[in-house]
Image (cartoon, rainbow, N blue to C red):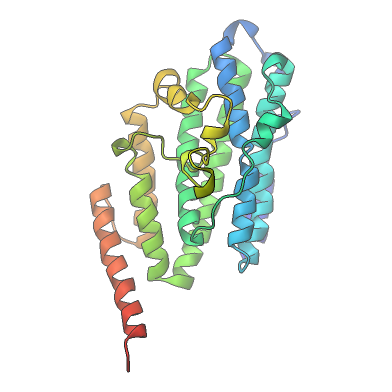
Length: 287
């Protein structure tokens, strides 16, 4: 089992909201209304770890190890929402999210293949790590800069934990896992070709609720994310390139094969998908 070791590792570096956040360094002159609004939207977005955890537990009923790890991931992700809300409670209480606003992003996600979902969230942690690092650079107020730096480190650790479960899946499921990881990897490393930010909170997950079936569509300002990325923290092609590089680097390590670009990863996806299909056809062919 991976859970006991991951619990111990993450427990050893867990930060304390009272003592590890420099609340006494707050400088009101360095916080604009626009910046404070983005903190509210991020606090609500982070609250979506609640429905994501419900999804993970439902779709991984046969995997008690991974389900147990969700207790750690869920705690730390909800803590992200909590520390952002605490910041607003202390310094901009007029913008603190209401319980109704938080509850709005809790809804059922449609069932999805567990391996693809695992890879999707692994890539999401990489992307969020880079988003928060950029947000820390953009903000001018010392306390919120420190908070985003803290959250970014958490997201990187979460990505590392997901990677451990992906390595385990390769041993257990072989080409089935390779095909799933490559499929989602191609999607998540192709953000430059899409009109929307590729992150789990911005993907459609409930057909019956469409078009209000993304986390971002259910926050108070559904257009916030794109504006935050493009106009405020300016998550440009250079930063997007860093995300793609990390996805390709980790896929290269996982698959023990070098991927210099998305096209190479896509060719690998086609190869392994063909192998999976051939095996499936052989199994169903009449004797």
